Image 1 (cartoon, rainbow, N blue to C red):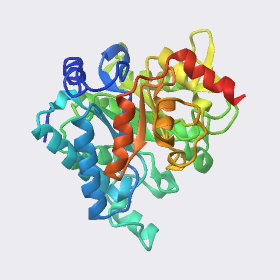
Image 2 (cartoon, rainbow, N blue to C red; image 1 turned 180 degrees about the horizontal axis):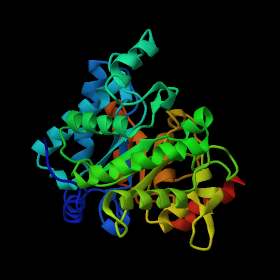
Image 3 (cartoon, rainbow, N blue to C red; image 1 turned 180 degrees about the vertical axis):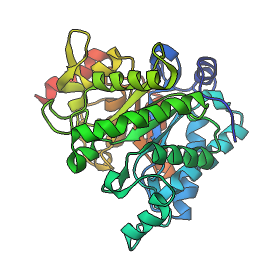
Length: 374
């Protein structure tokens, strides 16, 4: 197991050495912690659950980390749990090649059931045997294949640390808690989420994670009156209560980041003003996150491959293909710290590295893209 977490000194050193070939502006600042994190990161969702994809993903992670990409994102359930083992192999190779653990930021999502042998023929029997009998949660806490209980989250965190070979994760994200709104109601979802935050605050104290947050699909893009909508200010309040429940009334929370989809067809996180920040204004989710000192990670930046083929940003100069233009669009968005691209083919990493060597768009050039769309 590798000890340590990403640090200011480690990431600054990384930006100067492994990031030397990257363009100015490629590294973002992780708010009050002042970590230097790459504006592009490797997502690890795509691909079949087989040995060939494992090998390809390990190669992608290793080469990315050696070439200026120090943000890696995964999830306990990706490819039935295989993805994190492949990420761990790639990280181990990069560490062996000289990259220090304190230079790399590793984020893991949890909540969806892992099902390591694939979808079971009898889900109810499998759940009773593998989940309920282990004390991880009852069937009435399920929303589809998502389980929002402290015990389940703690188990997935332990599995992730073991698979990755890391003592401590830099970030653990509760993945799409909004799926419980349709199944159980919004109030029930919040009642379930707060003890999960308490569990994650305890995980910080135990040295298992450095911080936590949520990953969303709809919750930070929809209108305020949509059932799935999630207030970021309310999340911060929940984290404050969780920290105080664990450590006492003066405790500070460790809610650090949010993740939401962002691509040319899904710009609502930047353009929809739906968040009352509690600071006297209404903002977009990306802007509100910045005001509330939460790091924003963009997911789905290639739209599951759609924007590697379609080219709504054809007017964007200086880049070789639609995938590079989509990556540049997402990583240049004001307030987005890291844009994640899901990769399972080593050749696709070339596009990520090409954009890393290109300066992000200036704010004026970026906002002009919206005027052109109008």
